[in-house]
Length: 307
Length: 273
Image 1 (cartoon, rainbow over the protein chains, first blue to last red):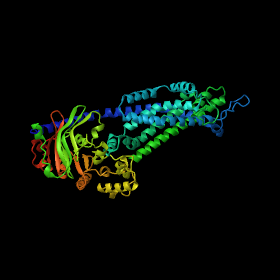
Image 2 (cartoon, one colour):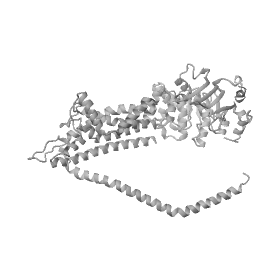
Image 3 (tube, rainbow over the protein chains, first blue to last red):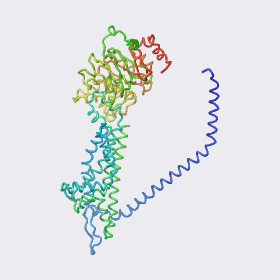
Image 4 (cartoon, one colour):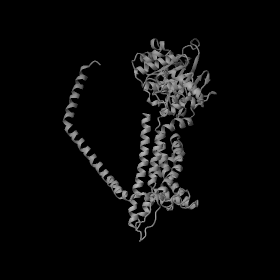
């Protein structure tokens, strides 16, 4: 306090020194910045080129095979007399929709409730469940198929069916839904929970009326992302749905699915069937695109309402 | 014991009118570490009592003990006695949910429920406690929003999301939400620290006008605020073991003009904290 002048003087010199260093290094810093931006651009190109090629191939090969019969008729086997009589893939479209609706019905309620439980409690059971979910989320999807085969198809004697397939897909979706729901619930600010409690609400009421509505955007987004992953999965359904050739919504009937149709037709000796694969792939990608687009629009709209 | 008596110079409660809450040797600890202790004072009914002191002196911790918000914090322990109208709030017949409807709380940052409309926020406490009758909810919404001086600006947009309100309006909505339950005591944890001066002024005016129907206990960092609005004042300070303790409790007038403890004077004069 007494020697007021000296610190001011020192501060002045320090600022001058800082300015000198800043001026000297400016050119180098600007150059570094340019190089970094360039590197980012290169990386972006490297990432975008394969993706663009993929979409180009999909459209180029897929669009020509799309017609009314493609969507409305079931497959038929080409013959030497009619080598192009592939029929359509309506069975796979219906099968994929059915499988994923059933899988969602099985997985979403269970997954969301387990996620809420994990977020709201600190117990041995919760820790164990979380570890299982994290492990399952990284497990190879063929495992779900094997499990559904041995458990549903074989042990329960249900046979190759939509039920077995949706079970496998549900097991696949479950950990994703559990973990994303847990995060969504945990992200609800503690102050909101306290506000509810401070109004004399019982803890379960705070969970249902305050925390859950606030976490809903995250929960729904997580569920839709899990669904969009399940739609494209081949391995879990490969062993268990039986590859049915009819349009059926029956739980116990053998069904087909878009990824399975790709898998089977790609191995076909008939060029006409191999060509059809691209159409199926295009439909599948469009499906997934629509599902995740819905999720994103939904989430951003909710966000806007909140802000 | 003698030492403690000197620290908690409680004014004679007999000649100061009815008492809403009594604190007897209240201490709060987390995992065995004391956060605040030695708190004994009476909260006068229909008065504003302020809790002042520097950061870490345990004001908020003490306030949250008054409606048992520490209950869900693992490792938290509240000892001593806290009486509401003579009933022990921790060991008496009072359930924790009933206590919280009688002792409301307004938090530091406005925290209206973001997924609810203004109307739904105002009546949320009633709904949580089982009130479903539309006419009753409508009436409670209007009266509580009026009490919080918010009705005139929101009456035409009750169905709008509460997050559309300004910060000051959101905080008044939180006050309305607490008032809808018709509490006897309203706890306020630095309710204006996140607000601009004009919004602060409106909340302060509100507190003064609410005194006739509710006892207010307010934590504040702002000494002018404590001096302006409170009738009684508790001064807390962090002890050598980093636990907060009550240094002095008295009328606000005495705390600011003629305190017993020199540390109180140092603090109110702005020499530290």
